[in-house]
Length: 393
Image (cartoon, rainbow, N blue to C red; front, side, top):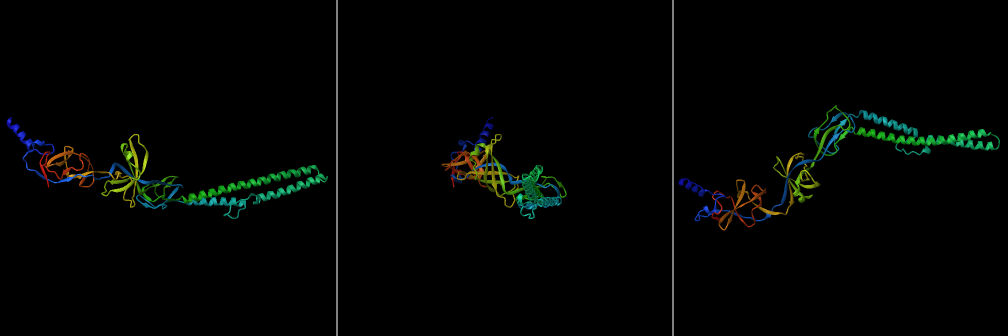
């Protein structure tokens, strides 16, 4: 029993590390040589980290305005297109016939109105043949009526003849008014025929489907020879430059986010980080997730980034913030805790620290546990323990 107790004491006295008791170290032990670094405040921009995704600036499903049979398809999956570039063509035969039919009907109405110059469709009812003919009949009827009344008063003609002349005059006046109304109706018909012709020409133009903006085709949805009804989709087009960055920020951090703040975007599978800026903020906090929807913008001139990609977003909320960073190899990790050795008047002490983000491959941010002016041990090894005597080289 005594032998076992002595063995346990021997093992405890031979252990070293961050959890060894300071009184175990021998008082006459030779100081251990170490290298240290003084902690100082340095510029470390304050950032907010979140996850998000890349979205296309614009996305449109290109459909057909004029139904018909698909005659030509100039794009496919992955095709790069420019604004106003022809994507597809619908068979225009039927629409050409409709244009010719509308032109014929329009010319027919112009002929009724006596318009010889198609460039000028100004109509003065009194100058049309229909109204002038009715006006001549009316003048004749008025003359006969006045003459009949005069001869009747002189006893040459009977009263019946005078009444007949008066009735003819009233009929001529009504015919004159009807002629003017007919011209007005033909003028309205002319406008309708012109609108029908414009619509037929527009339908003929719509047989050619063009890209509304520059981008890339992400999906082809039609085949050659297929009859497409109105609004039938042909392809899906996305604008790849610039790209939108959409992320959600927790409510507690939302007041720190402002438009114009820089964004660092880390993309899976790419070693180089991209940069952008915050451009839009949601006016309300989402009631379910208790987060703020934030949208950024990032250039993508060469189209190397794809919408839909998962990204890590770092929003710089304070570029002038200062903090503490230390070498990564100065941290001793054990049982889920991070510690740093401090040299204090030739005696080692240790501090529990909370680490933040990695600033470089060698340096890491310290959120708590250290103060400026302390001397931390660089590259601590297994010989060091709290309370050990050290000498700084």
